[in-house]
Amino acid sequence: MRMMKKTLLALSLLGLTGSAVASPFYVDTGTNWDGATTGTSDKVCDTCTSSKDEITYIYQSSSTTTDTNGSGALDAGDTIFTSGGLAVGSLSNNVVTGFNPSQNFNNDNDNGYGGSNWLLSFSFTGLVGTVMEYTPGVSLELAYGPYGNFDLFYTTDGVTFSNFMDIKVTGAVTGSGGTLLAGTVDFTNVDALPVSMYNMFNSDGATCGGLTGYYDIWLNCDGTGLPLLEINFLADFNTNASSIVVVDNGAQGATLRGNHDGSAVFNVPEPSTLALFGGTLLLLGAGARRRKA
Image (cartoon, rainbow, N blue to C red; front, side, top):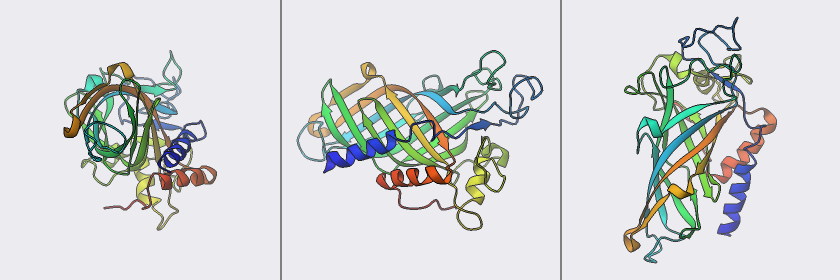
């Protein structure tokens, strides 16, 4: 039964990685970093990028396990606790590396994205899951529940980081191909910032009564005055197997550290995809709707 649940969960998440899930978005930093305009480029606005489908990134992770089943070794059934991104490493190794489609010459403008202008990063802590399978040197499969904090940051100097948006984690599964993590965009515990920074990410498709900013959608389409419109997030974390270091301390648990890369998409669901996402979130244990502070 456990293997069946894990397989169903993985298949449901994998089914969401197709192009139908990726809703186009653009990023408006409020600053024209490269001097290009809507008249000279394909930017959505002078302070915006062009329309994008996904973000790409690299990050580091650190995990510890508890010998839950008392076997005296790391194996199936043990509890695992995982943190990553800026929570465990520097910006150089934990950063959004770019967007897809990426800028090339005068196409698919990134509004000067990069280390000399502006960067995006993230941090996550408190992911709690279960080791589903472990064969030393061969495979490690994990399943995480709806726990943890996932924060996104904006920086223009690599020193000051503004937490402008969060992801409410609904669950994740890890297998031979890496980790698929699902969640929804959330602004309940972000830094005190101008509203324009909360609306840095914008939908380039579905809107909330004409509103495109992710914060405006979250705030207004909450299922009360306007229909509930949750912005879903699906991240594919690829694991560099050769860089994963596992130290099995027997009954004292194990530690795991690794380097990863991957990509993530946002989805502002149309009715047809909303049902698909809803089924997946149920499998991930997300039974509660978003609540505003």
